[in-house]
Image 1: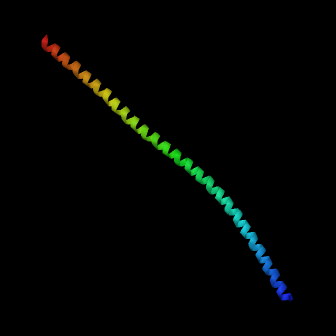
Image 2 (image 1 turned 135 degrees about the vertical axis):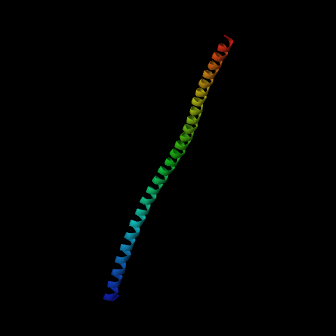
Image 3 (image 1 turned 60 degrees about the vertical axis):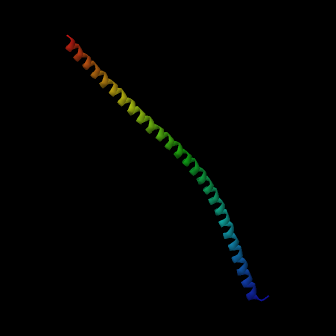
Length: 97
């Protein structure tokens, strides 16, 4: 083997070692990114479940508020009706006297 061939072989071996080193680094980075992705996917799933729970609670709260408002309206209507009945009774009593 000539000296030029030996230099070329050395350069080639050096470049292959560098390429292998880069490849190993990329594999390690890929593994770390996959772990991060798995953790983020787990977090995302948890947040989606929390979101669903909060939406259900919100809908329940809206329903309860509507029912509460209707009950308050019902109480108010009963009070007004009671006052009207008392006024009618007074009028009837005045007519009878």
